[in-house]
Image (tube, rainbow, N blue to C red; front, top):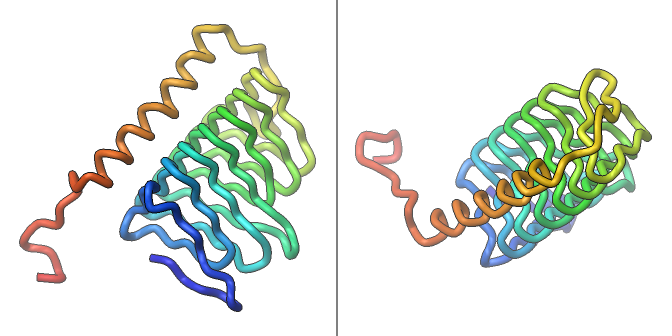
Length: 179
């Protein structure tokens, strides 16, 4: 569901997947190969939201901004189910765990991982290629090459899944309310 707000309309690449019950409101940009999954809400009424190429915003994620602000999700980012992103920046290739919260003006570094359920408080910077965990989230350790490879595979897997959905793998079946 795409909604114009105050003259601002979502811009979605024809090669991006947006689930039929996701909501994109206002100044939202979704780049090629990106995916916005079921129940996700991207509300860019105060400022802009960008979802970079091949990034996935999974089920029930909420993304919002401060007045005049921006939420930037760079390319190859995986945002896990139920996460909340508010006026923050996620650098290339990072992973945000399920139900994690990233608050105002926080920056998650390139290829960093924020553990499920963690809270990255406002203004915090998570260093590149580190695991951060806790509430408030703190860097716990530097990621190994094997862990970095898993992060890359996550982005590729969701890009391939989105391509499958775009090719028509999702089909509405009989017995639903709209029949």
